[in-house]
Image (cartoon, rainbow, N blue to C red):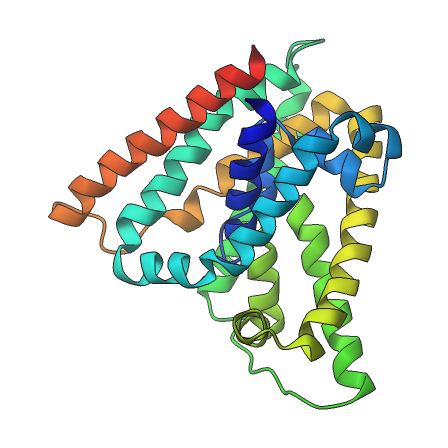
Length: 273
């Protein structure tokens, strides 16, 4: 069962990287496989062998989410924004109990944990508010050659590190750099002049980011998880949909909110069992 749902987890992880505001790292934590995936990203051979089938299906699901669902998820957000946003909010809210349970397996939260929690929350909310001010509304200037390729590698590197961090959207980082549309179009038409340098930057960023996160988890587990919970809580705010109110879309959206929360709670119980 766990290996099979690895495909589902990977698919959602892939979809999260398509939508600015959604955090793939958040869903890894919610589904209880954050440590497993980070170990694989950090190239821990022992961990990869131990969880090979799960990771293989996770990888297939991620590619499916990125490629196959690029059009579908865009359609849903354009035509059913409230329902789609509330469904993802339900997934996040329903996963918080599992995060807390994982964090407190060995020791309880301490008063000092409010500091990293607040910092994690403030980081995600601040990025969202800055984006709303239009500070990051820049136009990408596409140029050919080595400089352009280097830019793609660098942007992908930074976005990949964000992919590891719960609550921070890798796609949002691409929006900040003004290259989100270029990346999405490259995936849609399979433009390898963008995909190849992007893949290089992503691979380097994921490995470095995963190693950093695992190092911090090893030395400061409770504090890191407190920050993670803060970032996860903050990630709900960018998903608050426009048009939310007393209308049919909101009523049906609440159904999807409950559905998303129920799915996350169910999966969380399976992981904790």
